[in-house]
Structure formats: structure tokens, C-alpha cells
Image (tube, rainbow, N blue to C red; front, side):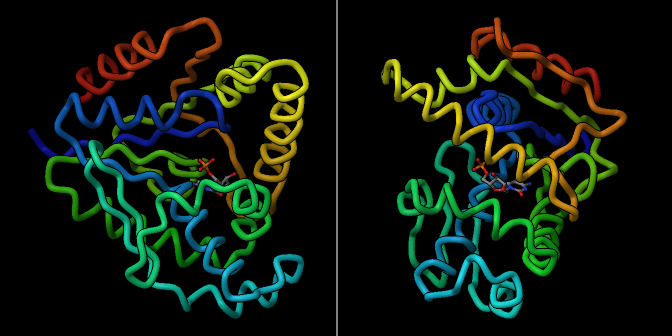
Length: 220
Ligand code: C5P
């Protein structure tokens, strides 16, 4: 079968990562977490004292860190200048700053180029998850999925076992990040015109995975 390119976009807390990894593993495809790349460049900016409130400082530094992404869905890896940052990119500090960094056009240009070269090197094909994959990064993808879920379902998934006030705080932070990602000028979070929308609010992860696997198989 020729290489199949699958773009999976949507806001956070919709099950995008879990779905993308499982679909790639099940179908023997490569996997790319583009959010991890934006988190990695944000981690580098924070660690190098770049003022996150100043887009021109971010733009000037955008070409400096060397970001390398693994494409094995069973062991997603990411390094910055040779350092494993899989853990540090998930801190609350990076999460709260990533939208500002990813809104800078020079950052997007750099990361987009990286994403396209990784996708074109995937011999069997690849599942690429993010916010602008179907609209901007890989507009010719064979299949585009746009995952959605109610704010309540998304906050509950992100909070895990947390209760009450923690769920409310998580919900606020999620909405703030999605609003920033959806309203920025350069390639905002958006559903491509030819994407299949899947509302995951009332579906189990297993159901979402099955749905996407079926859609990919129809394209192969
Ligand atoms: O998917 P994740 O929550 O890890 O993404 C972190 C952030 O990276 C998003 O909130 C967004 O600001 C940015 N991002 C982006 N474009 C992508 C993927 C992620 O701007 N394709």
C-alpha cells in the first residue's frame, strides 16, 4: 500500500494524542505529536531567559534550538539540543506559555518545515496530530479528522481524578489556551473544509480509535 498521511486536529482534551498513537500503532504507521514540538521550543525559550511577552525576542531565537522528534507511536521521543525533554515539556509553566510562543510566525515557519520533512520521510505513512495539520502543514493529507468534545468532557479528561475546584480551574485554563490558539493570526486551530468531524464527548477512547481506523482503511 502507498504511504497514507493522516491529519488529526482539534483542541486539547478531545483524546487527540491517545487516539493518534493507537491508530498509528494499530496500522503500522509513524506518529508525530506536533504539540510536543511547540512545547519543546517553548521549554527552550523559558530555559534561555527569552521574554515570552516579547514576540520579537521569540522570533529572533526561533532558529536556535535543535528539535528532534521520534516517530514511534509506542515510544514518542523528543529532544532539544540532545536533551530528552519528554517530561519537562508537560509542566504547567510550559503549558501556560506555549500558546504565546506558537503564535509567533517565525516559530511556526520553522516547526512547519520540520513537520513536512518528517511526514515526507515516513515510508509506510504517518499520523500527525496538532491544530493546523489539515489546514496548513499537510493540506494534501489522505484523511483529515477534526476531534471535538464538550468543555466539560475535555476538562474532566484532563483533570483525571481531580474533583470540584480543580476541574473548574482546568476547564478555565483549557478554554483560555484554545481561545488563544483559535484566534491567532498565523494558522489558527481550525477544521479544514474537507475534514471529518468526530464529537468524542459520549464515546469511549476505544470507539474513537475504531472510528478513525475504519476511516483510514477506507482510504488505503
Ligand atoms: O497538543 P498540545 O496541547 O500538546 O499542544 C500544545 C500547544 O502547542 C497548543 O496549545 C498550541 O498553542 C500549540 N500547537 C500549535 N499547532 C499545532 C500543535 C500545537 O500551535 N499543530
